[in-house]
Length: 264
Ligand SMILES: NC(=O)c1ccc[n+]([C@@H]2O[C@H](COP(=O)([O-])OP(=O)(O)OC[C@H]3O[C@@H](n4cnc5c(N)ncnc54)[C@H](O)[C@@H]3O)[C@@H](O)[C@H]2O)c1
Image (cartoon, rainbow, N blue to C red; front, side, top):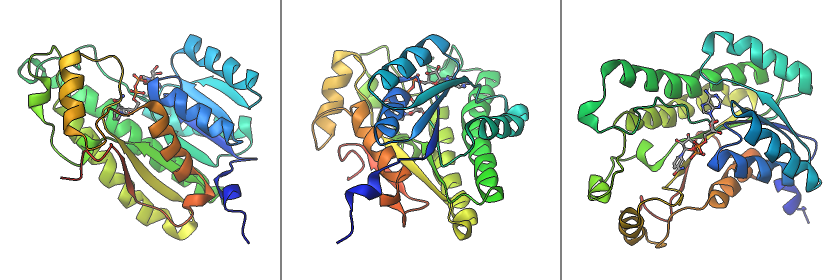
């Protein structure tokens, strides 16, 4: 009988997580490390990254941190080359950074064109250009790796603005452009690199509980069949699955981690 649990192991693998110190990135980094991968946190926040590395290492796993700016696309090819040289390999790459401008959460009517453009460039081009370069590097080095892009429920459907009424929250319009673009680009990249054994998948989380406005949380929970918001570990387990051999025949997929939000 096959050891099916072993297919979830990342022992001996090198994993990189952009935005690895964030709400979701930190949980994903811990999940990959706990499954055996040497996990490299790529983030701008040195303090949070170092604390996370210390926690992971204290728990008996392997992690490291490299300062990384996911929007500096001109420098990205060299940066990936340096990372692979330093860590010797590149098996798993997770795009989980969340670059945004200061006015990201402003009402749609108040968003200026320059800001619209900047957010789309930083986030959409950041994820897609990086995924493309990583896939090229994997192909060049003969690695049958796995790339996972963090998208969103709002990459596959429009937002429900009723949820944001009577709160000071909103859902930035550009988010649908960014996440919709990431979802479909991921499919395309998966098609192009499938013949080389490189897998590229999306994880689409629903809203993750982060102490949002109580009115919002209540309305959100009522809309979700599982009647709760997502937890970081819900998302991290999905990423771990797609990163592992357990998902060896899955590519170009869009895995909804949304408590059933997109069922209807
Ligand atoms: N939190 C949610 O409810 C939710 C839901 C669906 C999808 N997502 C997606 O998950 C991903 C992560 O979201 P999050 O909630 O963990 O965000 P977060 O803000 O908690 O963390 C983002 C991390 O990215 C880092 N970062 C920002 N700009 C960077 C840059 N230029 N280069 C490198 N690192 C940078 C930050 O330092 C931070 O550690 C995003 O793609 C987001 O759209 C989040």
